[in-house]
Structure formats: C-alpha cells, structure tokens
Length: 165
Image (cartoon, rainbow, N blue to C red; front, side, top):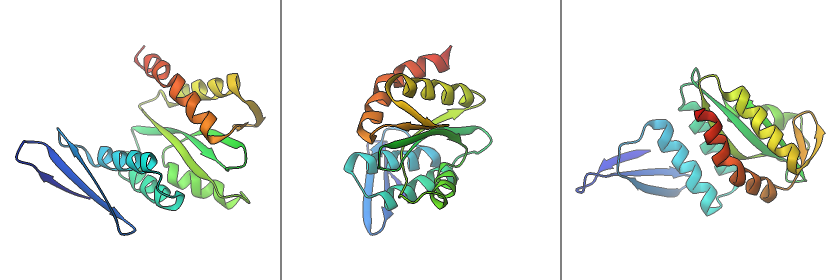
C-alpha cells in the first residue's frame, strides 16, 4: 500500500493485489488497519473473487492490534449454511475451518469489536440470525449469503446503538 498527500490536503491510497490496482482518496490520513479494511470494502463492492478477497482479509487482520480488536464473522459455504462466530484473526479462523470443510468457505462479513464487547456482539448477531434463519448446529445457520447480508444491513445500526450503551 502506498500513500501520497494531494495538493488539496487529502490523501491518496494505492494498493495492488494480483496485478490489480485499487486506489481511493481520504480527507484524513488513515491507520494501516483502516487502509486495509477500506480496500477490503472496495473489493466487496466491485465483486473481486474469493481468493483475492480472503488475501486482503488476511492482511487486514494482520494489521490490527490483536489485543484490542476481535471480529464477529459470517462465513459461508455457498451451499446454504452460514457460521457466525468470533475471532481475533478471521483469516486464520477461515483457514482452520476450511481444513474440515468439503466446500470452499468465504468470509462474507467481518464486524470489528474493540475491547470486551465482542462476546455481546457475537450473541447479538447469533440472536438476530435465529430470528430469521433456522439454526443447523452450534453456530451454523441455514441461510443464503444475500439474505444474511440483508439481515446484517437491517440490524447494523441497532448493533452500533447497543455498543454505545
């Protein structure tokens, strides 16, 4: 990732993965974590493939201060099952789960939690999933990726409100 300051005072970030250049501007200088998370978001928006997406997620989790940030993740097997769990290193968790899955797994969403509220975050999202989808086993739910993303979108503001109280 490279960063340059523009004449107007904003910053331009450039990132390359598999010979593809991604760039974006920001009015403020971003931390390494925020830079990589922004690239991850852009990749989601433009639909880059799973392997490239997961490489960036690995970089994002490696750029974080693991003592203070934990993620609630949503991992899909693209066959109607979604796992909701928590991990400090989502990329490593994905690799661990992949070894025991006959299907390719993909992180479809990872929500960062700082401090100790990640347990509440995991419980919040598992309860939200239970309201909309059939539980399969443990932290797995019967659901399609797009439907889960809609539920996340629906509940994300409520989750933010709960974190602030």
